[in-house]
Amino acid sequence: MEKGKFYWLKTEPIEWLIDKSGWWVSKKCLFAGIQFNTHEKYNGDFSKKAIKHYLDTYFSKEIEPAEHTVIRETSKSLEEPTARQKKYGITVSDEPMPVKDQINFYIQNGMSFMLHGPSGVGKTQRVKEIDPDLTSITLCNGILPEDVIGKTIYPNGVAENGGVWIPPAWYVDLCKKCQNTPDKQHVLFIDEVTNARETTQSLIYHIALNKSIAQGVGKLPDNAVVVLAGNSKEESGAAYNMPAPLFRRLSHVYLDLNIQDWLEWGSEQSKSHPEEKGRLNIHPLIASFVATYPEVFYTEYDEDNPATFALDPRKWEKVSDKIYANKGVMRREILEADVGPEIATSLLQYAKNPPLSLEEIMEGAYTENDIPKVADAKLALALSLRYATPKQVGVVRQFIAKNLGKENLAVFDSAWVGKDDMKALMLAKVQASAGR
Image (cartoon, rainbow, N blue to C red; front, top):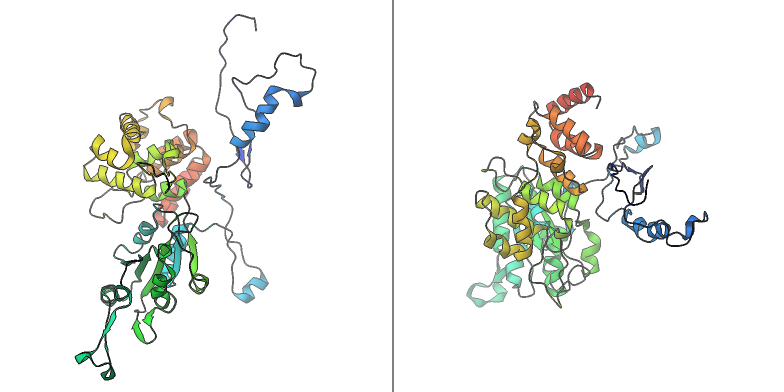
C-alpha cells in the first residue's frame, strides 16, 4: 500500500465457536481503530504493544458470556439407564428444565411451591398461563386476619355454646372452582409474601404447608395447589426475610431476568386472549424492539432516588396490550405514559421501519440491511416465524440458516414443532431433503 492513497477493505461477519463454558473462539478477527504500535519501532515483543493492552483490558471482557446468555446444547438429554439405575427405577436427564416447565410440574402434581423473582419479571403471569382463572390473595401489612383465615362468630354472643366459622371469600371461590372442574388443578396464588411482616406471613403457614386454614378447619380441596410469590431482600428494599419453617418446607423456583426466555414466551399464542386469533403474549414489534435494544428490557429501581419511569417485562407487556387494544395504532401519548418520552420516541421511530415479516421472507423482498445484526434481535425474528405453515417452513428454514445462524435454526425448529407429532415428522423430512 502506498502512503496517501485510499483503499477499500472487504469485511465479513466473524464466525464464532462457543464451547460449553461459554467462551467464544474464532480463527480470525479484524480490528479497526486500534493502534498496533505507538511511536517506537516494533522489536518483536508483542506483549508491550497497544493492541495487546486493548485485547487484555477491554476486548477480553466484552467477549465474556453475558449473564443472560443461554448456551443451547443439542446432545441427547436422556441416556439409556444402566443396570444399577434400572434397579432403582430412575433415569437421569442432563437437559436444563425451563422455568415454565418447573412451574407446570409443581402445579400439575399439586405440590406447593414459592416463586421468586424481581418486581415486574412476570411471576403472576407465568402462573396465569397455566391457570388463567386462579384464586389470589395479596398479602400486605394492613390486611385483616379475617380476610385470610376467616372469622368465628358466636350465636347470642356466648362463647360456651361454640362458635360458627365463617370462611374467607377466597376459600369459597376456590372450593367452587375445584368442585365445578374436579379433573383440573386450581391455583391459590398468594402474592407479595415477602413484603409482609412475619406476623402477617404467619397467617398463611397452615394454608401453604398443610393445605388447610387451621387444624381441622378449612381443608383445601384435593385439586387445589398453593403457589406463593415474593421478592428477596436484594431485589426489594421493602422485603422481609421468610421465617425458617415456612422457607424450609417449600420448594423454590427462581425466575430470572432472562431476555431469551422472555422472547420465547412472548412469541407464544396468548392464552389470556383466546378470542383474538393470532394474538401473541408480546406484540412482535415490541419483542423485536426490546431484543434490538436489550438495555431497555429492565431498568433498576432506586427507592432512594426513583426514576420517573421504570422498565421491566411487565411494563413491556402492558405496552404490548395497548398496541393490541388500539388495533395496532401506536400513539405517542399512550406509550409515554409507560416508558417515558425518550423511549417512546425511539419506539415510534423503530416502528416506522419494522423488522421483516413472514410474507417478505417468503417473497424474498428484503436486502442485507434488513437482516438484524444483534444476537437477541436475530432470536426474536426466528421466534416470530414459528407460525409458518408446513408449505412455508422450508423457505423459512433456509432464510434462518443463512442469515440468523444454526443456533437460532434449532430454536425455530423446536418452537415450530412444539408438541405436534405430525409437525415433527414433517420437519424430519424437510431436514433430510435440506441436509439438515
